[in-house]
Length: 195
Image (cartoon, rainbow, N blue to C red):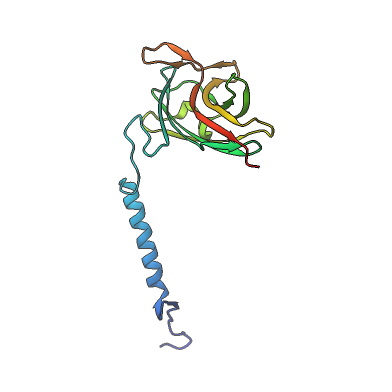
């Protein structure tokens, strides 16, 4: 050792019953993270869905919105009580390049068509539809507040796309390309009395 120099020291951390040099512990941590990123990049750790499908979705659908966007499925609870909030997640996929930024909505409708609750977005999944890829689906979640006083019973949960500035909705087409509506029933939800 030369004059004035201090000896090199290695800090140690207690791991288990013994001491392990801290640089080894960090090396293991960095190595594990690198392996995770490599495997994830190769798709080993991801669930891949076939085009036009969502793996693991609760309720698969195939609703065609104007030949532009498909609604592939929905996740959501089977029941809710008045005064509660429930989460609905829909999965969209652009069928072609979309040249309009659509707004989206989730409506909870009574059997007579009366609007009970709703949630709206300027950009579905906070991602403008003009920028949606055609080879991947878009996961889009909503919080729907059910007002107090809503009577127990079965209600429809619907989704739709529209242009707010002009006030028109993107139509829903059947397999023949004919308009069958301007919103899509996702599923029925039961309002229950939790008292």
